[in-house]
Amino acid sequence: MVLVFAEATKGIFKKSAQETVTYGYQTAQAMGTECGVLTLGSVQDAGQLGVYGASKVYNISDAKLEQFDAQVFTSAITGAAQQLGAKVIVLSHNSTGKSVIGRLAARLGAGSVPGANAVPSINGSFKVRTPVFSGKATATVEITSDFKVISLIGNSLPPVESGSAVSVESISVDLPEPRVKVKSVERAEGIVPLPEAELVVSAGRGLKGPENWGIIDELAAELGATTACSRPVADVGWRPHHEHVGQTGIAIRPNLYIAAGISGAIQHLAGVNNSKTIVVIKKDPEAPFFKAADYGVVGDLFEVVPKLTEAIRKHKA
Image 1: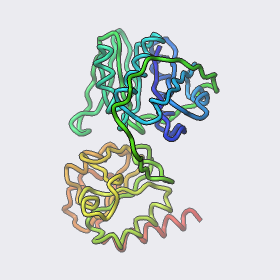
Image 2: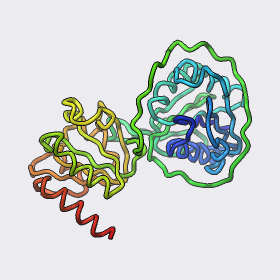
Image 3: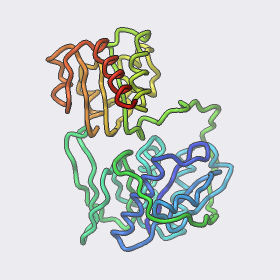
Image 4: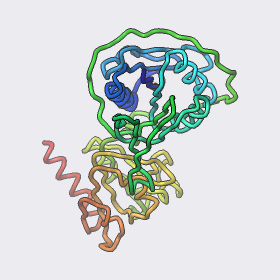
């Protein structure tokens, strides 16, 4: 069995969970086995994950799982995998997945591939593809261990509806007492999270100040995009840190990434160069970002961005 850990936010499954289940189902099909899904804590409509290929959904309901603790989550997933006879465990390559994948591999004696971006190749061996060197190259990793653990980068493959809703079965495993006490959680509400966003509009210091950010918000609103920023913008407090994309921020893979007033330092490119289409708006024709761009506009962003927004508005009308 391939066991997928589907994470919920406030009990609701987002696009990343659908992608991970799709990936698990396609992996199970290649292996000639079935795909099961594990959910933890209080969740809603878990059976609907069967639409994306799960043949069975399992839930562990325990008060210890209501807040994230890496040790407790690792124990839950390990126990479920052993109980259900799963040999391949798949998770999302998000903050939870990054915290858990190494612990899972150690517990199970498993080979692991963090940040996979394609369904494994299974032809006499089990090989997984993953980007390396900040996305500049791709490595193919062969896993030879009995247990295998993989985390999937967001937007690597679209969710595919291949089944129907299934029943949810409760299981139980022994869990340790949490060592972490969560006092509060602050989340950005009402937006598509950057790792899941298919359209992103970003800006840097070329915007000159937070008071000018309105033109970026207007463009994003017309496109239905999520906004992002470079590290210097987040560091000086123009934008919140959860919008910072780059090597030290969030790595993204949108279908379209529009960057205005960003020079394109290597640290920023490392987090965005897996975007399918990159559009750069910058006054300096020598800006390094133009070398990575699919489309470049050499011009004043204060003139170009409003005109682009208006053009999109007219096109939509």
